[in-house]
Length: 638
Image (tube, rainbow, N blue to C red):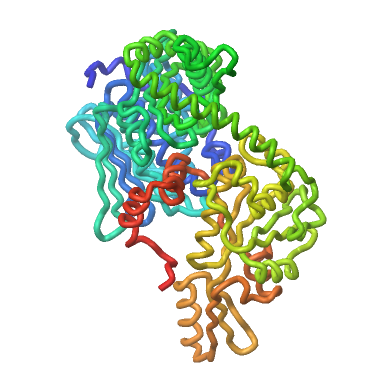
């Protein structure tokens, strides 16, 4: 670590202003008040610590989730300045924690690059927390301030002596703001692992002490993003054993990239700007794809792999089987939205193109063996694309895709395409019949499925398009699939998967999600897919009844009835087909009373990995996954 403390003091903190709007419209600042927004709170504070690490002043961060959803984040950086702010005439710590656009991120002298572009991170977390405490070690002292829903309870004060420097933030998310304040360990752990890969000089300690036996993990990767690519491709057959790596800098923008190729059909590119995962891509990703395709075409022509009369590789060809990590550091990034999902800087396009054209051909020239393997892999993708195109054209002429009439089994709604319209994809003809009778015919369409659909993870496009059930789904939704997918043609506002609450039902749901993930991914990215949650039990007592959606809920209802000495009868639903139309409407379809789960892609790499393991051809990986997760499995029929 560098010891230069630069002039990092109260004068470094510049203000842009505001705070109450955060509580009124939290979605503007953290994306949502659901799970994604909740986890974004941790990201905001951790990103501040990582910015200290990027600047060379921090090499250790600790994140702990404690009982009651209280989060503790600590680092050994310089510590937030605590001296009096020259404009606000109060501690700079209080300014940072309570003024919306206040922070050192606006000063190029303090942070050359930063993920905390807007300077709102700490104050937004403070505003959306029931309470928050901050401890700062600086100048040999420990400084402290506590807040409730963003309001300081007292001025910053000294509470003790300190060795070293750093910041510790403790906060509890506000249950008045968030739909849930229960953190998902996997989401937090994955983000911390990403940051450790991206910052090879940084050690991140993670502790989840919500259980009796605390879960601990330390992330530190000397190999940086090369190790990241190896991690992302660990369950795949590699075309290139050791990832290709290059880095370069131009006009103050740093580019770092590592990539390899596998035998998978999809691309797994993870892109970052100043350590922020830009899940929607941006100019850096567009430039990477364009340059990679151009470079591979140049080599293929020069080596005679592409003949004079053959068509060029397209972007889809060079991306098939690609596993890559792209990290850029930009002094003044222009993100779209506070959640920083997409980069907009046009100048980054030129920098990435320039670095790739300068570095990558030289590396590939020196590694002819892997170059030829990569070109052979891309050539296979080109041949498959041409064959698939011909197959689609042939199948379309013979299949339901060419026929604009809707499937005979579909009971359409009268207002398809309208807001709040929805299609229920229902397991079985029996449940489908009940659903058709019990539905709201204006807004709810029903498409029954007969058994399990084709596993598209193992099927060719030609076989997929010949499958009657998949054809029915595609035509009913109206979007087409794959390269021809168009979400603007979706005929319904929501797609609801309604299967039995057993292993077979879970399997059918997984097969449907595999289809959506592989060939209709925007449906998931745009939040159009839901899973119905049918009840497991009906409890009848006297002339009344209640439904339980879990064993725990059943116990609560039964205990309550027993305490009242009330007689009751419990019916266990084995499937949706056991419910009559009225019951199905009341429990599973009525928007006023039903329960549904929104299917979200919060972690595309993890989802892709699981789909590949569970639905693909690698039996060994699947066996290993099942063995490791067997003790956590639920809803397994005995």
